[in-house]
Amino acid sequence: MSEFFDAPDRLGESALPDGRLLGWAEWGPPDGAPVLLCPGAATSRWLGFGAGVVEALGVRLVSVDRPGLGASTPAPGRTFSEFADDMRHLCLLRGLGHPAVVGNSQGAPFALACAAEGVASALAVVSGADEVAAPQFASVLEPDLRGLVERTERDPAGAEELFASFTADAMWDMVMAGSPECDLAVYQDPDFAFGYRRALDEAFAQGAAGYARDTVLAMGRWPFALDEIRVPVDIWYGEQDTSHSPDNGALLAARIPGAHRHVVPGIGGALLWTHPRSILTSLVGKATSGG
Image 1 (cartoon, one colour):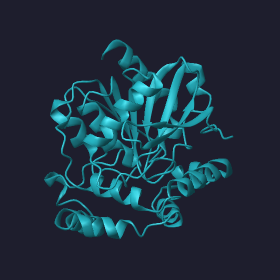
Image 2: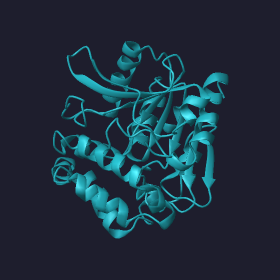
Image 3: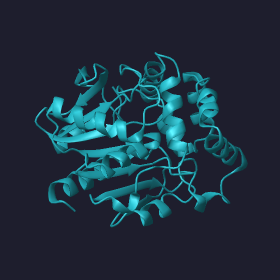
């Protein structure tokens, strides 16, 4: 469909022990090296990455709708730990074993939770939403973001209600307004724009409650211990990315033992779609070798 991503090879839903459904999409050979994708904010399973690269590298890429988004059953009040448990069950149901994990944008803290709780064999954080509530960032956040962080900490239920007023159109407008020209060349590519808008519309099909819960979790203090993550971790940021991390992941990398930080020139937050070969080659190599 696009030079940046293909339509899924396989789509489905899997039933968890409590009866909830998790929607998923897959690309690549069914017997390939499993890579689990935690996608970005308010995007459904349908938007993958690595057109052609996934197949060439023998990767089985699996993207999952978080609860309340796309085809996945809502789970009000869910936590990071509960999400990791969901992924553990999905791995059993889909025969993924101990997959490598990619966390993109707002999917990053959910991927980190999987690493912290033993679900992941290796991790790539790509243009990851950083822990903006960390005290080290308090003095450097721009005022509007600092206000949202403080409101989320002070009144998480009220913040969740605020985020639940968001829409697919509002997300599209926010991304387009906040992206550098190098990213807009990707996002405004007609095929990519079609796929991205479809993923946004699917993510909001049940309303915005799923997105709102994701955002409250991501914007608050993260409850898992980054310094206890023991799997290999790559942290990837585009040099022109000004929206995901105050320092392009420098502090995040320093908090995770052995993490390897990559800062790529000439691109911003669209890095997942412009550099899939480098990301997947490093990730799968580390998952296979253990480091």
